[in-house]
Image (cartoon, rainbow, N blue to C red):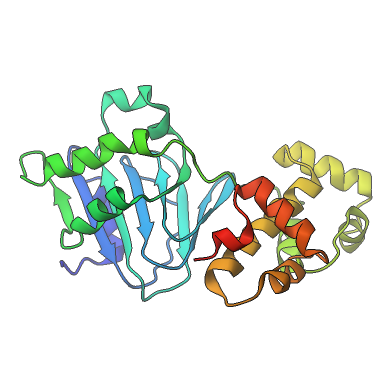
Length: 263
């Protein structure tokens, strides 16, 4: 594999508009918000990751990939530096705008066929040009994505740059195991319940309780994939004192029982 400096990759990705750009890396990197002129498929080999855009947080569990459309500002963080991050940046085509998949950020399951095709590129790094014998293979991956990726992972967590709400969201994230209520959180920031309710609705178009539930479920998914905690321990650590209530909420949002979500 080429020894590409990560700092240069962001520039190299868009240097040749008609090429695909392949990057497999094993070392954890921290990029600030950035965007590309190419659509991005990223698969984390083992572990889990978070994808951040300007308005949402996406949880990327094992056996899923993230699709980031061209032009969308984002960054992501993964949990296990030893695992490979496999990314394909696809050339943009005029007809992409007519296919909803290519224009929407999302997290999708990785089936066996797609996984084998991603792994087939493991020794490829850098540009793959249109006249390269490998180019039709990359184009085939791009063309098949809309057909095999019809059901995105349903959980996304809205976020905001609003300076009044940012510390509130941080407080919630750091205290998910606690019995959080509008009164408790509002008191911590000297907000009335009505003010906090309006702040959530006006800023993120979601209620306080909807946000809290989503945040707890995303935290639970991380625990299920990254720890050996029992389901009852995870329920407790995400603010539930009833395993059945936790399991039912998880199922309604994720479409699977917690026990089925574990690897």
